Length: 139
Image 1 (cartoon, one colour):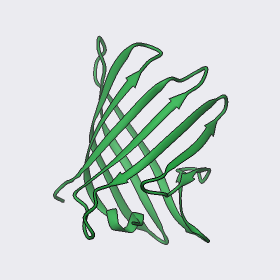
Image 2 (tube, one colour; image 1 turned 90 degrees about the horizontal axis):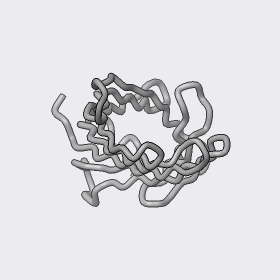
Image 3 (tube, helix red, strand yellow; image 1 turned 90 degrees about the vertical axis):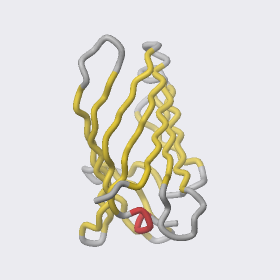
Image 4 (cartoon, one colour; image 1 turned 135 degrees about the horizontal axis):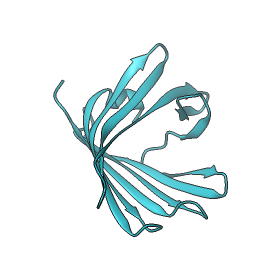
């Protein structure tokens, strides 16, 4: 499974269990993977809701590039984030904090209709689990 198998629009439903604040947050929005030159662009946007606060617009952009040995997810500015390894756990150190994540794609052989991304983040500044479910959207 490569990021090319996931091109197009997706509905994004993300739940965040923030153990630092004791809050549960939610992001509802869209994710779109598109071919940009020889890369895959990964763009997310949505509305973050949290208890006791006004909803806030959130967004992020990632890049997925092909390298010798496979694909890599990069931050928008080109820094390495993690290898593209659906089904396996990946690691990303972020200062004193540590990210451990996994991408799971439904088992259909062609045109998946859902996929998931989970991040477990621990450290002195962060302690949360973010679980995203992406379901195929109609363009």
